[in-house]
Image (cartoon, rainbow, N blue to C red):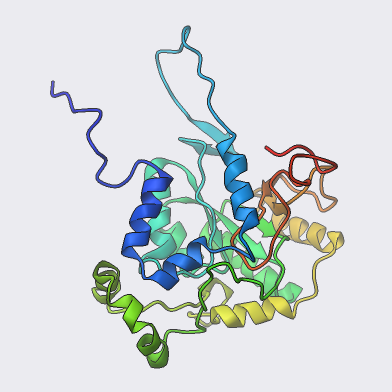
Length: 311
């Protein structure tokens, strides 16, 4: 029996910190900055990281089970480990985008949350075999939202995540780069000095014969494939009346009638009674990266308060 060295360096990475260092080396500066920049002075990001760092493990030292497992269930779905892949919007990190993340989720036996602002379609993602929760914003009219829910259900989504905590602001002044509407010739010339210094990123896109598209295919109208640009998706959201709790209840009931799978609310930012719109689960989402300074982690003032103590 061959015994492998358990301390041999992982050829990929063994921590988020190492992954971030490698991403900074590989990605063009504007692409990397779009991932890590926050609103205004970035206080929410700092608070989120500080709160997460307070979590730790207190292992037992004796009486342990001989078979070790991190397996659990979430919304009726079996998980090999209690870590999920979070949904993100359009990206220019890698040509495989969310499909690559879905392959990783399937390989590790966990769930991917796919945004309807993602750069890959829900059909491409579910085709990997990954258990997928589809995340929707309240954008467009009800007919449009029903069509998007029907599409997600037909693709095999195992649950719907309704995001309610997104608001619009131009206050992204903490290292945030300008995000172009599309990557055309003018944009490529302007960004060339920052891109040519990252040959591995260029090669990844070059070998596929594609460039970052910056479109949202899951927002495409029936019969379309590409969907609107990220700016077009923003415009649809900005011109949609914010939902009431009755709207959220309608969304929940519509999804249950279509699919019968769990409905979750994303954007729980404070403690208190359960949201009136109902849902099978909640996602605490302070949204430290998008263009606004949201509430601190835990929902209340820093250090605790009416919203409850920080995690």
